[in-house]
Structures are given as C-alpha cells and as structure tokens.
Length: 302
Image 1 (cartoon, rainbow, N blue to C red):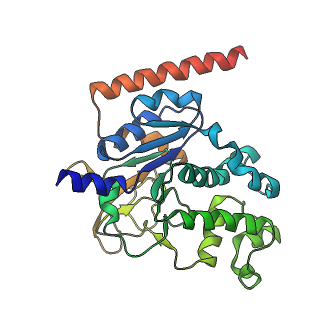
Image 2: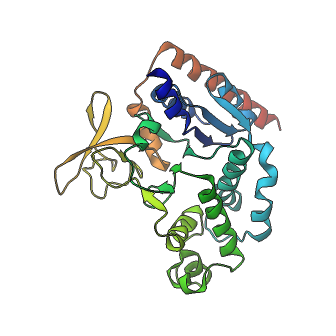
C-alpha cells in the first residue's frame, strides 16, 4: 500500500517560484511540506532563499535565463505596476515550462508562495473532472498542470497576443486587445492572459475556486463574494480538525477549503492560519530571520 501511495504522489511534484526572501516563506513552505510529506517540492529561487534547500529542493532561477528570451523580444509594458514586477509575473510561466522540460516533468502543481495548504494535493486531484490546467477564477496561483503541452500552449498564446497572432474572430472577447485598443484601462498581466487562454481554449481550464464539497481552493482571503466575512474584510474561517471551512451565505453550506491564499493585505493574518508550529519550525524561522537581517545589511552597504 505504501508503494502505491508514493507512486501516486510523485505524479504531481509541487513547484514554487520566488525571488528574494520573505518573512512568510517559512510558514507556507513548512506547512506545504507537512501536508505533502512524500511529494517532491521545488523552490525555483535565488541566493537569498537558498537556505530552504535543507527542507526542499532549491533550484537557482538563473539556470533559466534563456527561457524568457522570446517574451523579452515582444513584451510591451501596459500596467500601472512596475515593469520589472509585471514582466516577472508573466515570465514565471516560461521559466516553469523550461524547468519541466529540463527535468522531463510532464505534470505538476504550481503554487504561489503566499498560500497555506491544508491537504495532500495529489490525493485531492483524483476528484477533479476532466481538465488540462486549473485556475482560481481570475489567476492560476494554484495550477494543476495535467500535461506540459498545455502550459506550452499558454506561453505560446502570450507570444501570439504580443505578436498580433491571436485568432481574429476572438479578439472582441480578448482582454489583451481591449486594453491595447484603449477600450478598458485595465492592466495587462498574466491574469489577462489566463482570461484570453480560456477564450481561445474554453474547455481546457478547470476553475477549482468554485464552492465544492470535495474541497475548494481559495481565490484570496479578501475575496468574500459568496462566503461569510469577518469585520476586517477577510473570509470567516470555521475550523474543523484543524482544517478551514467557509460558509456560503446563500445556502448556509459549510465548504471545506484545501488552500487559503494570503495575497496582498491578507498576509497580515497568515500567521493566525498556520497549523504546524514546532521546535523545528521555530528553528527555520530563526534561520530565516538571520538571512533577512544579513541581506538587509548587505543592501545598506551597497
């Protein structure tokens, strides 16, 4: 039985991409490791977060410098956010694709680094209907990539948009072309391209953020549209056996949540939702505080 479980888990390695270091990384990485103990977890990062190699597989992002060359040739900045930030958000999918090619990985789970996971992600996948990739309503911060070709199609679709090779008959539905033609003042980001990929391949993406009794993936702690909300504007969490549940307002149904996403302002409540405190975790936090301090000093000296 043990061998059968290991084979299943290894089908979906978990990959995070994060440059620099952050105070919350010990929390998200530690909990991910605890809930998915038999799964290969990779952090594509840099020297500022290399110390996590004691707990998970660390890969230097500079290995994939060539992966974004085609994107760099066509990229046009159209966002109120910084160009470097926006470019990197889009470029990460090209980096992920190159990583999968180099490691001969056909399928994986991509996770943003500000997500707390409460379940075994490979076991959860068995309840999904047919899909190629997943997204969470507006972005793919939790993305089960069923096969590598699908991710390659997504990256090629980005290049097609910038190169004006997006299907002519679909341009009216495209957010990218609405922004380019000044019909909307929205930013162009990787979320734009997830929308447009769904327009071009409408049966490919599975929205795993919809309320589901098998388990729901959180869009954002601040996204409370159909769920009960706390006074400070975050989802109201009902804990059962250390697992988060949220009540749908209209039906009163309590839905189990597999992840909670602490995007932006949500990070101020991340620690309250962490469930795997221990002496070893405190050691990791202390080590991380030390690294944050050292790089802060180095930055000042420069």
